[in-house]
Structure formats: structure tokens, C-alpha cells
Picture (cartoon, rainbow, N blue to C red):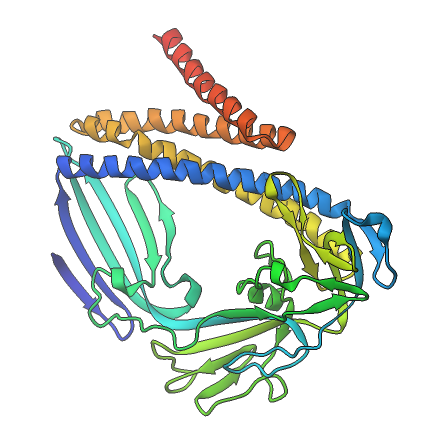
Length: 421
């Protein structure tokens, strides 16, 4: 139960202390092991997709540049790039505020003023394997992207202390008086159905809709949010020329606020909205496969990795962007894959640690050993996946190489343990 309550206007804190039995911890650890298997599978998927995308970036950089104004039958069926003025007969807007205008694509990003729960959990293993957990939750209000309302963010984590933040009020420890309503306006994005660059028709149905997170990049030039088929990098600043205002909206900086009272004193449920677009009648570069009848469509590379991207820039700037993406996201996703794999293997062996927690010192020693072993296993499998898949693009060869790496790493640890004994 909650032992104490400290209340302020929009800041509240509660503390809970409870004991979890050894048997409950052991049962939960087996459930964690199953999740660990799924995490390992997902880590391989991320690593393979990442290396495939990195290889595709090399293909994109090597595409033949063709003129957007003359037919080029010599490169039909091959990956090409062309640069010119992108045009569409359609006007694009949305059902809320964005006025229809000559845009190829648009994205709408919405933040909501919400209750946030910060949860700090400190744990102590007792003799016999039970665990005493002290949970301190703090509630405060802040602006948060509505796309992240259901996610939990880890602020810090050590062996026996974890701090997280979440705006998912359905999972709050004290949901009373901390309810976050459903956003009145969702995130959104859309694109025109037809467009062309010079004489070349684009298959707009094959492009993914713009990423809503791309709005962040539009308003922060140095940010990079991910691979995007149609990046919306032109920010829309609120004005009567670009947006339809409503009686309950106000403008401040780059945001259009939809407020219950006023933007100086936001209330839970208030919204702030930003738009970004890919303007028509501007220079653009498309990369894909040249087809007959002057069409550019997706180019399918090995293992179904597809190249079909549209950039609001000339070829030189486009290449610079691809090179930057390749360097930045390739290494980030490699690290993410490694961490996920390490976490997955650590979860699989957690029942061993819980069994040994009957004597806390044994459980602590076990975690240090299994942590080191699982880290090296994850590292060897990550490196193997990167090197083998990048070299062969063959999943069967990769599977064999990963098995060799896995058992090879275990054998090395076994030999080391015997030599120390």
C-alpha cells in the first residue's frame, strides 16, 4: 500500500513498499526468458534489415543519373536517379487546419499536455530469495508527442535501481485524478496520388506515407529522424495564408495551440500542432528503377530490399544526405541490435540467478558471470551477423555462421574456466 502522499499543484509524490516472494520471482523469471527469446529474434531482424538498408544505400549512391527531360531507353530495368521540377495537378491539405496548396506530401505532428508518471524502483534481495521493492512515483505535467503516450522511457538503470517515465495513465500506480484524455486531433500524414519529375511519372502508391517524426527535422535542421521515402523538410509556420484558425486556437512560434484556457497556463488535454510539407514545383530527386513508358518504380535489390525514395533536393545534396544517413543510422541500429540481443540472452539465464538468490551473494556473483558471458555471446553474434550478411547476403550461410560463433564463444569461456580452475 502507499505509505505517504505529498501534494502540490501539478506535482504529486507517492511511495509504496512491498515484498515479492522467491517463488513469484522465479515464476516471473521464466516468463522473462520467453520474452528474451523474442527479443533475440527481433534483434536479428533489426541487424539484417539494417545491413540490407546499408547495402541499399550503396546502390542508391551508385545509381546512374539520367535527364528528367528526355527518354532514356538504354537504362530500362536498371536503378537510376533523375533530378528536376516535381509537379502534381492535385492540391493537398488536411481536415483540421492545413489549407489545400501545391504540396506533394504533408505531415502533422501533435503534442498534448499530459500527466506523466516518473517511477523509481529500488530493490533489495533478502536471504531466502525474496525481494523488497520500494517504489516512489511522482506525477507532474508536461508537453509530450501523442505518438509516445503509450511508451515507457527508461531514464536510468542500475542493478538494483530503475527510473522510468510514462504518460500511459491506464498503467499509472495512482490513476485517480491523473487521467490523460484521448487526443482530440491525431497525428497524420498524406501524399498526392500522382506526381512526375520532368517526363517521368512516379508511382506514388509505392511510397510510404511521410513519417510524422519528420516534422521535427523540418524545424530542427541538424536533426535526423530516420529513413523516409518522402521527407517533409519544409516547415509550415502558422499564418492565415497556410492554416485555417479556429476560435479556440492561438499561435506561438512554430506551434498552433488548441487550448481550453490559454497557452500561458496549459491544462491536461491541450494540444499544440505543427506541420511540415514537401512542396510541389520545386527541385526534387527520385531514385528507383526505370521502366518503359517513362515511369520510375521501386528497384528491388537482394532479399527484397527495395529502393524507391524521393528527396526535395538536387543529386549532390541527396547523395550527401544518404551518406550521412548511412553513417548515422547504420551504427545506431547496430548498437541497438547488440543491446537487444544482450538483453535477450540475459533474460534467458535469469532463472539461474533467481535460484541462486536464496543466498544473495551467490545471486550477485551469478549475475556478474552471466552478464559477462551473455555480453560476449551477443557481441560475437552481432559482429558475425554484420560481417557474414554484408558479405554473402545469404540467410542460410548466416545461420550456420551464427551457430559456429555461439558455440565457439561458449567453448572459449569453458576453456578459460578450466584453466583458472
